[in-house]
Image 1 (cartoon, rainbow, N blue to C red):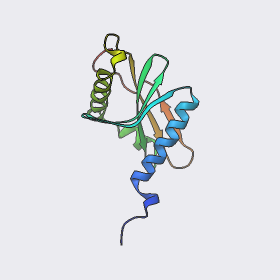
Image 2: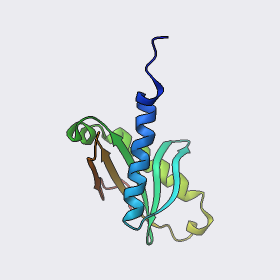
Image 3: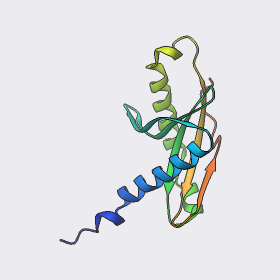
Image 4: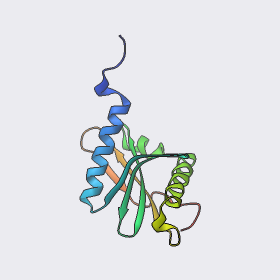
Length: 127
């Protein structure tokens, strides 16, 4: 009765932000391997491939770009790293030759503001 309309929920806004991010990344030549990939360590918003590199992409939607950038803290970065390592460990093609890994962030704000940051952070473990 007092719930927000579904179209303004943060869940739906997040889905729209992820769709915008995916379109941006695909336009840059990246291939989507998975969306909202769930692992025992958490979720990777977008799992992409760029050449020989597997890219875990965190998508953040906020009203202001600055608050979106500040919302990704080291515990979340570690969770995404562990999720990517788990996914790679389950891929038979990478058993003997792990791929290069990268962690990107796409920040999305209302309107047309969207920014892609490659190598947003460096993994604590090396490839």
